[in-house]
Image 1 (cartoon, one colour):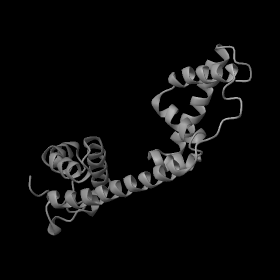
Image 2 (cartoon, one colour; image 1 turned 120 degrees about the vertical axis):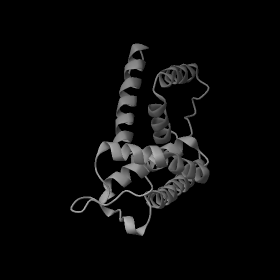
Image 3 (cartoon, one colour; image 1 turned 135 degrees about the vertical axis):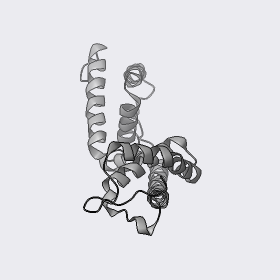
Length: 185
């Protein structure tokens, strides 16, 4: 299956499941291997490979057999997706560095008060009950002072996902603190 013939009056690559399954079986290892070699991270490589085949599916009408093999076409898509992943990684690193440069939020003068210690204990316990994503979003919002848009850029998640994690995390915290008897939770 080195070349997939063009369909005369249809897409350049057939849209049937069997052809796409065969294409993925034959070239999935190549795509994943190239992504893993460039990125050095298996999870990121899996994400890139998935993006490559999704883009190939969406752009199958743009494949022209006379220009090269399906493997060459997929390698080209892979190179672009790897470049995008590296750019995203660099953007996240810059934002994380900027967030690290900001001074931490200073507590009030009552940090040594017993009530303050109890509040920190209760909030810490409530935070541990959150999902990792909710905890990360709330940490970036309240301790790193990032906006939801900045959080979306740092994490690579869609803005709606960040907003959902924030809302659900705050709701869960409110319920946990109310169950502990904290008044104005």
